Length: 163
Image: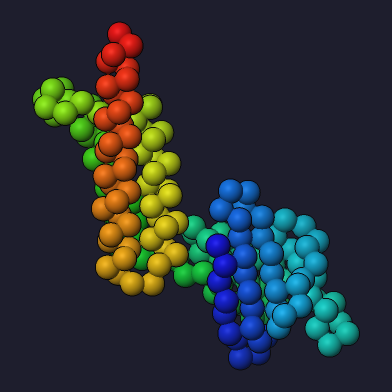
């Protein structure tokens, strides 16, 4: 994921973070910063090397610390993004652990359902945060909810057939 921020003192900041590995890259005014440690970069500013720190991640909210300046690179999740993601997990946990609901339409619950729905909820949060329009975010949530439910249903059918 890539975010570009224009700051009045620092200039244009480009923050990139790999979804899979969490690897971070930072560019200020077109110059790629040298990584010193996991979240520490060296910025050559006017012939002087400054240490620049990145705290957080795309999922939680990344902030850049330069001397006494703090720049928000990625915003924190909105309340409705968190609620939608949690609802994906809660629906599968409640449905998968209810005998009555599973007699209507079986879905896998417990650890397997929790793992599937937890992963899908996290993926939903990342995908929703990457979008700007609320309608698109809600469309992603509906699609992820359906994908989670279908996946847990198919796993439940596979387990029932294996018995």
